[in-house]
Length: 120
Image 1 (cartoon, rainbow, N blue to C red):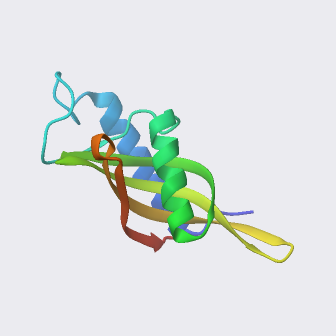
Image 2 (image 1 turned 90 degrees about the vertical axis):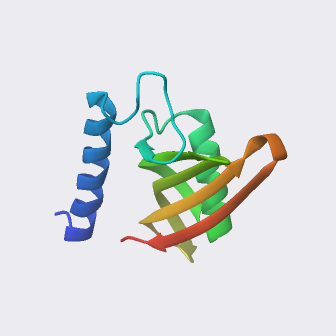
C-alpha cells in the first residue's frame, strides 16, 4: 500500500519539525519565547495528548494519534497539531489526518479550537 502525496506532505512536515526540534535552533536555550511557533519536542506528552483529544472531540472525530506539531507562546499557548483521527461510519472506520489549532489558557480553565481542516 503506497503513500499518497498528501500523506507524504504531512510526513515531510513532521520530519522537518522533528529535525528543527533536535537541532536546537527552534527555541532559545531558556525555552519558549512569546511570538514564534516552535516544534513540539514530545507529541506523546500528556498535556499535548489532552489538547489533541480536546481538538478531536470539538471536530466530532476520535483521536488515534498525534503525529507532531508546533506551539506558540502568546497570552496563553497556541498549539498547531497534526493528528490522526477516525470518523465512524457504520462498520467502516478510516483514519484521516487533520490540522488542528487550539488556544489554551490553563490558569483560566479556557481552551478553544480556533481552526481545523482535513489534510487527508
